[in-house]
Length: 539
Image (cartoon, rainbow, N blue to C red; front, top):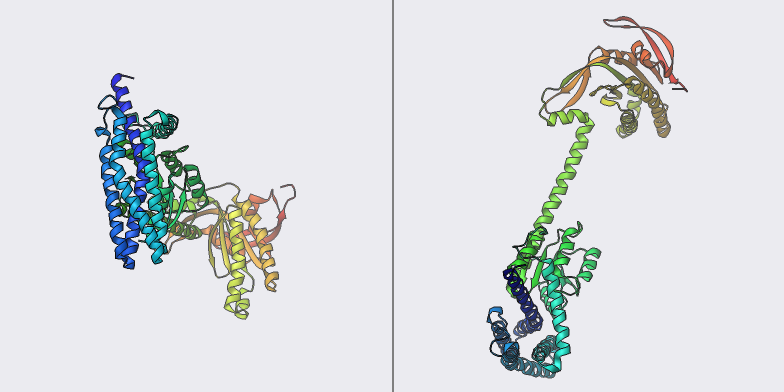
């Protein structure tokens, strides 16, 4: 790497370390500011003017701490180690300037706790205690920062420095600068929100704020714990800290977006690491937004509401898309009950007039014997029950044997083989189906307590088929073959299958048949006919 590249990497790493130190101080400072704002809201609502005055003093001290903190920790304003006493002088100045407002926070806080106990305002004590705890943490970290420049605190300083470097390095390894090759870039209703932060004060403050907004909140102290919670239950939004030990927020984000079960959950990254590379990489990896610490409560609320609204719109769009898909499947199923699949595909490709000539098809007609008198005796519901039972089984048989149901007319059922696509063995398939149809009718009669019979006629020959109608489509077949098959059925016997000579010659090697006699067919004269008995054992 060139000297310029090394210098750039070094500067970037130093900026990241400064951001990590800012985060270490930001957490308690954000807790002081956040809990003080909550206390002010509660005190104003209860009319506790005396408390409001002291809380405003604490809030002012917190603002002063934040102002000094921003100035002193601005990366460009830090003295180099070789200038003006180096970081030791910088640390001493930080401690000197922050100590007075910190003492004001602790002093007023302790006084307010005493007054709250005396006056019975117990509801204030919890948050006041949080303010004092945060102030104590800030003082401890401030003292530790100063001691890290002295011999007495070298061991602890080394441990903190190592922890800082490990955490920052982990994030920087995952998030490459935009100037790198960039090949790994990924891509006010109550809601369930998951807050992920390794700092307890940050988790507590965010949770408190969100609960006050009416959200249901769960917290996780690490990336692994967050992934477990996401796998166990659904969330509407994740607030995710970027710099965390073991598994960085960026790694957690990529795992969330890589999982089909969680990829649609919006994620807002929250971090003191405010460099542009980090923001861009997180957005590229799928983050909904990126907020710097300490967060502005109004901005936080606006970003959360915006993310939740986007999720609701996405959920609504997905639900609508799923509804359209389900409706399309229903329409498809209904259409396929009326028209053959290949015909539907041809219509979708733009064909308007669909008519085909087939040199060899088999047509089967069936008719329930004595259905007219039976329907006169049955109530309408029982007639429909009978036809539904019989025709549903006929439909199943047609599908099973690769035949095409053409239509029903009353109690008559028409099926064809060898269309709308030519196929071999259609006469054999029609004969097999005919034998099963007799069993279906007998079984339906047994269920209904009636003796039912069916006549079946089959003929094989040329035919024309196509779409008839513009608004109510029907795929129909016509020609002499259809007429002959219909005549075979009408001149058949109950529970017998009447075959034309053409069908007999097509199936005689596979089925036992018996001569029936000659039948006059209009335009063809006399035709020998046969009765289908059963399939040969060897066939």
